Amino acid sequence: MRIYDFASFTEDKRGSMLYAVNKMNRQFRFAKFVVDFEDNTISIEIDFPISCSEVGGIAVEMLFRVMNMADEAYAEFMKAAWSN
Image (cartoon, rainbow, N blue to C red):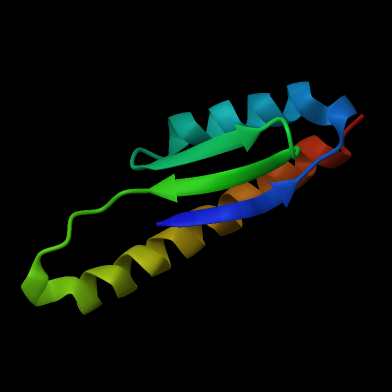
């Protein structure tokens, strides 16, 4: 599952955003936060196993988990984007 352009930032905030992304990558084990320096955006990537008999339940569970991670991470990214 990938969420592209989850957050964006200005060029002068690259260092603080990279620090925030690294912090989130250490905090969440199975999610990967990725910085795209060409677009100055952050994306989220998460891989999860799917068995053919349980695809729906697993997908819903992973969606809830990604939403919880995104809520926490977004606050951290906005702190980095708006700090001095």
